[in-house]
Image (cartoon, rainbow, N blue to C red; front, side):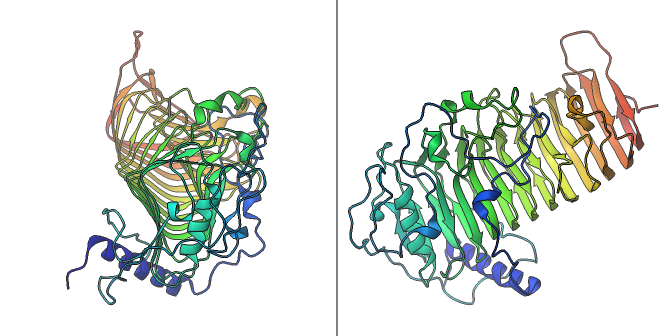
Length: 503
């Protein structure tokens, strides 16, 4: 019997989950971790850093908002599926009480089909989810796609019902405009195979910042049986109403605005084809995750929107970002502390601040090792291939980095190592050791006359930096010759070098 593409997808993710469990042996012990308090862990607040920046995002309440409903809604605190308990007092129009309607059912996928992918590899699949799983449509749990009803509790009821079911399960957000405040989808789940969330319509973020008690709009947490987030739908945080409350440039200790999608302690996940628009803070963070693939995403916000990074990765292993189009007001992709075995390929970036590693060097930061960025293009960004570390930092290391086959168009700093990031707040050198870094086949145009800048630490100079086949020409408005600048860097230059190698 021939299998549909979704059946193959679910089987592959299930096989991946079983393989991952066999490799790791036991589940990571996380019982005492307060997930809500870890919102800001490993997050870089972008290029408006000041002293003490990078602290975890707090409640982030802005003036002028009504004390609305949905604040602090938590999937783990919801009643048993179908119990019918109403939302918290003061909530918007919620579903009527009583048992939730029985979800639609479908045949489970055939057993024994498919081939397990290699260890650490998420299946390369692309069809939308659907066949073979029991469907938990959020509208059957009271959600209304009218653009004004707060659907946070209804989303959670649908999730809980799917998560606690015993067969393959899929949560569906259908056509419509579904507004919601803060929501947490928590595992572990009992359903067989990866839990599927298919977004067809548009999910709108509540514009009242008092709704967001943990600095997150939608969180996925403690899911180790596999997760597939898919669909043609959009997460629109409506951040344009909140950006005026971002005061990081003048007050670096002020909290970050809410993250649109936060994945934390999630294993064996595929997020594909969705769109994210106008986040309040970061569009997406992947923290403390393992074996996680993001592909075919489209992430957009105006270039003047503050701290709206596209994808931020931290404390995670085996994360791959492929074939995404990202244009925001901050880093298209930022790879933070504790990240290992990270792959980025086929990404189109711009506007934004480039594809960055860092910033690194806060207290408790961990090493970054094994980052490969290939076959990407950047247009009109303020930086290209960048590594940035803070001054006066603890002793950590960055190693095993490759930027290769990168195309630049009118990029201000195409190749840059900046170990004096935030130097206006400290005159002490960075103690982040950078080594084994390779820039290969990087070509295009630079909007500034210094196309290659290796500004390394006086305390721990960069070692093993290699530049191979660099071909960048100046595209700026003023008459200038293109050049390279190197300090405290033990670098080698081979192949074509335009600009000329540092003396």
